[in-house]
Structures are given as C-alpha cells and as structure tokens.
Amino acid sequence: MEKISEYIQSGLLESYVLGLATPLEAKEVEEMAATHDEVRAAIDEFSKILEKKILENAVAPDPVVKPMLMATLNYIDRLEKGEKITFPPLLDEGSKISDYEEWLTRPDMSAPADFNDIHAKIIAHTSEVTTAIVWIKDFAPGEVHTDELEKFLIVEGTCDITIEKDTFSLVPGDFLAIPLFKDHTVKVTSGIPCKVILQRVAA
Image (tube, rainbow, N blue to C red; front, side, top):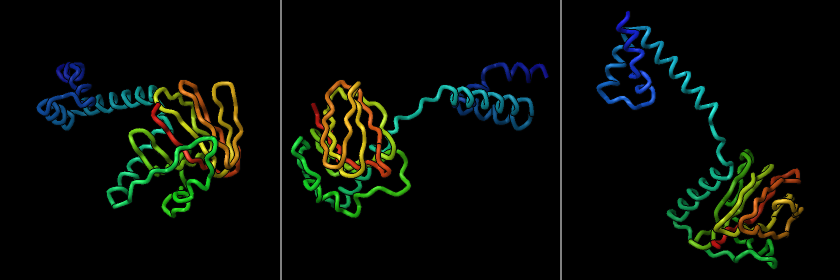
C-alpha cells in the first residue's frame, strides 16, 4: 500500500491526465489504474479538480469571432464551387440599400431562423476591403479597430450604435462609419434582427 501511495504522489498521474506522459509512462499508468482502485480514484479526482479549474478560469469567446469565421469558410466554399468574385461599391454617406440589391436578393444570402446572436455572409473580400451582410439579433459587444475602418448601412430593423459616449439611433437606409481607436457597441432596438451591410476597409 505504501508503494501505491508513493506512486500516486509521484506526479506521474498528473502528467498522464495533462497529456504530458510519454507513451511508456501512459501505458504504465493505465496498467496501474486497471489493477489498483486507488490509482484509478486518484486519476478521477485530479481530472475533476483540473476540469473545475478550467471552468473557473474560462474566458468567454468573442461572439463576433465565430460568425465571421464561419462566414469566411462559407465564402471560400462558394468560390471553390465556382462563384465569381464581385466588387460591391464602397460604403459612404451617399450609399443606398439598392446599391447592394444584387446580393441582398440572392436566396443563399439569408440567415437561418434559429441563429444565435450574430450571423454573417461575406459577399466580397480583397486584401483592402471585406463586405458582408450581417444580422444582429440583440447586440454586438464592444470592439476597437486599430487597422481597419468599419462602416454600416442599415438594411432592416433598427439599432443604436454607441461610439464611446455618443449614441446614434439608426433606421434602414442610415449609414455610419466608426473611427479608428474608438470603442463601439451595437444594440438592436427593433423586434426583428438588425440586418446591415458591414464593410471593413484597411486603414
């Protein structure tokens, strides 16, 4: 029993649970666990402690990252299947929703009814400009851009975009550009998701 206690205290079980044990060490631990209940219990206990620590220190993922990553993968897939590269007009104060009708009326440029906070479809991408249709259900958390200008054209729904201390209440047809180095958030104020043309332009 004393040898088993020393084995449990050796640090090898922790290395095994963390995936740091060599193949030979891992095989040894598994053999010990199969024949000694105390070793199996010690492995289970350390696994529970590790899981608890991970959950306590977990950082919530940025809710914008996943939808934009999925939109990028979708865009690449569409190009590989033969979709032609397009060049939507740059957003500015004179932009109109109809300028983007070519993409807004496409059946594949829609959001699923059950999407989570944010859904996106990229309609064009170059090294200088990314243009996307974005649906925001409730809000988009604060962001600060240091190397790209972010521009919005509201298509459906309404929202408040707050840039530091200033809040802009936007309705369909409204345009807003976000200055560099300014924290900004989006809060949907309509009963439907706010649908926007979003453009990020390299600064």
